[in-house]
Amino acid sequence: MHRRPLLWISSGVLLLAVVVWQLTYPTDTVLPLARLDRNFVSGKKSAEIQSMLNEQYTNAPLTLSITGKKYDTTAAKAGMIPDNTAITQGLTAYSTWQRFIPFSLLVIGLMKNQPVSVKLDDSTFTTYATARSQDCAISPTMAGLELDGKKLKLVPAENGQACSTQSIRDAFDGLQLHSTGTSIKVEPQVVNPAGQGVDTSDVIEQARTVVDRTIRLKLLDKTTTISHATLASWLELPYDEATGKFGVQVDSTRVQTYLETAQKPVYIAPGTTHIHTTNGIETSRETGTTGRGVDINTTAVALSAKLLSGDGTVQATMIVLPPYVTYDEPYSADTAGLQKLLNDLVRNKGDYAISLQTVEGGIVASTKGTEHYHPASTYKMFVAWAILKRIDSGKLHWTDSTVNGMSVSKCFDAMIINSDNACGEYFGGDVIGWANLDTALKGIGFGCTDLSPPGWYTCSDDATLFLYKIQSGQLLDADQTNRLLDVMKKQVYRDGIPAGVAVAVADKVGFLYGMLHDAAIVYDSHGTYALTIFTDGSSWGDIADTAWQINAQLNHMK
Image (cartoon, rainbow, N blue to C red; front, side, top):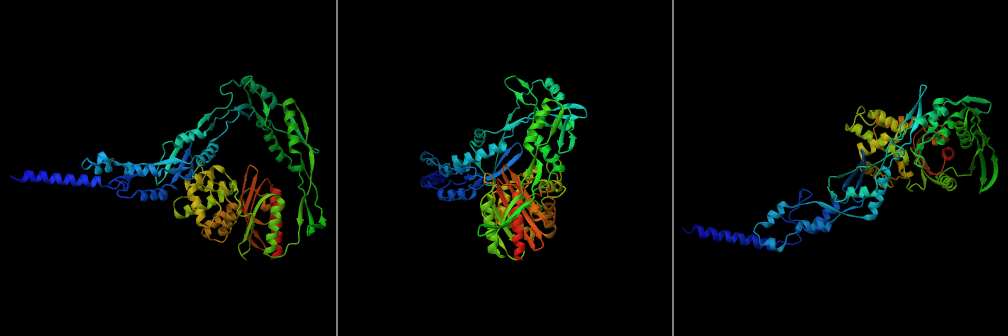
């Protein structure tokens, strides 16, 4: 008969106790059962949450996708910083009036899943978005022509694409980070080529008149008739906005490329003048022979004009190629002399960085070896190493499919032998991930390389260290080491270090804008060594000369 009052009293005491607990619940403590990014964090203090955010989310992986290409970085490098204040306030928010409602603390906590919202570091993000906008940009391709048998065919123009920095910013708007990785997708804007949809029948007839002409090139006393197919390949069809019509013009770059090959029968490479000095004063010289070649620019202009005007023969303009000039200084036959040579080469050659390390003998020398350079295509040897590690672990197989219908094996070879960009970007971005490659390279001792966009730089010291470790068997087993070195020995661009040392070389070159790089393992009679030469604004001939002088000094030291 007294149970009901007792029950009411007990319930009242319980409710009062719950309300008292809720009223005294600390304002800097996460609500019970609350989650942060789907992970339970109940009972943690605000300071603990902020520490967790800094550790787990500042450098959380971030992947931006643009038409299938992925760009891996971290939140911080993209300018995305966890909004610690807003996040901790969201996890601890519990108003006074809510505290008077029994069990509201548990209910509100259970319903709370706080996302990791971000603040924008505008300067860092602008740099990142600008770089991705440049990566995205593809100019539309102008319509061209090709000869299919006797029929002149139009090669249609192709659309380009663009991603404005604002469109990238919009894609990041309202972004929520996840510790395991966050993906963002940007859809580029299609850039249509000029004159799309305009009738080209008239201009095709004009072009046929041009292609049907008989154009001859005379190299000294030898005359060659240029094929109609070649003539067709030189033409492009620019669109004139003012008239609303297409025209016919010659792409001078294609003509110059043709002449580079056509001049081979009459080309004579220049020799080298060796100037001997002591303390900077010339003591003697060995004068090298002059060479001979076609004046590519002048002859290309003449060919273009002749093609547009009528049939005829163009006499190639020949020029005398002066000998290369080298200065031989008396360098001591030791590491000090080698270092002085590197210093002088960098001083005299221009924007150069040189690093060297012998596989035996412990000789290490470098000048500007830690200076940052865009790696150009030398990065592909790092990618090749990471691919071989995946092959070795069974995560990847030589017969797996990659881009353009190629197997991993064929794509791997093309990436090194022909410096194929599609394979390099696929392996580096899609298979490995730039951030993962970056981490792996730091793990083998790289001190000045960052291949996680927007960094994208390396240095000659790191490239040389990599080659030294590859050759000495520190990074791969014997079979995989040989697999990589075999393709590096077959790479087709041989006018740099291989031409200079004239011995067996396994190397990877890079060329982009004005940069020319060569990273090589040189197998000389005096010993094997890793040599990297990074340049900006140089030439393959100067790189070859640099390699020749270094190799001569090493021979002097043996």
